[in-house]
Amino acid sequence: MDDTRHGEGTRAVRAGLPEPRKYEPTLPGPVFAAHYHLPGEPTGPYTYGRDENPTWTRLEQAIGELEAPEEPDGVETVTFASGMAAISAVLFSQLKAGDAVVLPADGYQALPLVREQLEAYGIEVRTAPTGGDGQLTVLEGARLLWIETPSNPGLDVCDVRRLVRAAHAGGALVAVDNTLATPLGQRPLELGADFSVASDTKGMTGHGDILLGHVTCRDARLAASVRRWRKIVGAIPGPMEAWLAHRSLATLALRVDRQCANALALAEALDGRDDVTGLRYPGLPGDPSHTVAAGQMRRFGSVVSFVLPDRAWAERFLDALRLVDDATSFGGVRSTAERRARWGGDAVPEGFVRFSVGAEDTRDLVADVLRALDEAASAQPG
Ligand SMILES: *Cc1c(COP(=O)(O)O)cnc(C)c1O
Image (cartoon, rainbow, N blue to C red):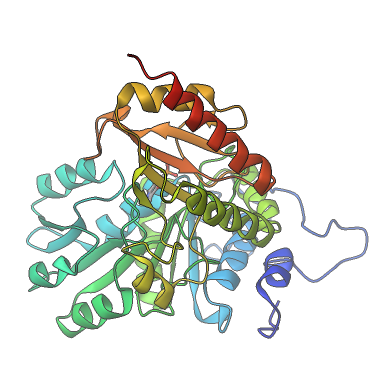
């Protein structure tokens, strides 16, 4: 679809669809093939299933239309078996022994493992917190700046344009983990980044039933190196997952609009309660991230975080919820919440709750949360 004047909902429902063909489904079904018959050219597309698959091609086209609606044919997208496969593809295809990379100190919880692996390969890893521009002080001589904004689970935000200017001035590439925002919330390539990377396991597909990831970039050489990495490690999406993801993109705008509206309503309802501290939602006008977020995001995401007085209090709250499952991950149509400290990987207080806001009716969801908070407070021992 090449009409860039359409709105985002229209783009989402039509993204990546082929020209209509009589008696064919609007979105052709998944292509299952290890090898293809009669490929013609030995080097052409669709010879071997680890290199290319028509179902990925359509999904990659669709994601490109959302990541770069002004010039979907000016970007390339490479899809992966998971978000971590996409992240590792960028890091390990771009960095070599002797290079330096800057990672977030407060990013996704598997990044410390990635750090160990990078260091084992002789790559210098520096870290900086997402908020506060600390990246600028450790950027000197780095080959790549990796940022995650908003960060998971802390919901801090960094100024992408500003960091990109500084990184590019020093010759560093910039990759943005855009998982939390999705391309409808933020378009990193338009903010100047070289790579927009995401776990599509989360809000992008939104039903909590597939793992998937992608990398989108403008520079064809960078895209080729990421694609080459996928071929080497073989972290390819299954055709069924890719097809389900493409089908799910049709409702992305609907889902994200409802989830963001619910998230703001929830944050507003929590704001000012005595039992809630450390409330974070980038869309809340009083949030420390709001000004920077408003300058680069078009929707503020579906995650709200806050702190209850202690571990037992947070557990009582989670137990009392009826419409919200106690589960990890985020971005799905069904609200989930979890006490993040149970994993031990994030630097968060015992009562820290990461709340993933779903697509329920706003009134029902807010009422359920407020009731559960009241129950948790009144069941306080002593
Ligand atoms: C979940 C997540 C990942 C990892 O994605 P998987 O699909 O689980 O591999 C990476 N970054 C962020 C910000 C995430 O939330």
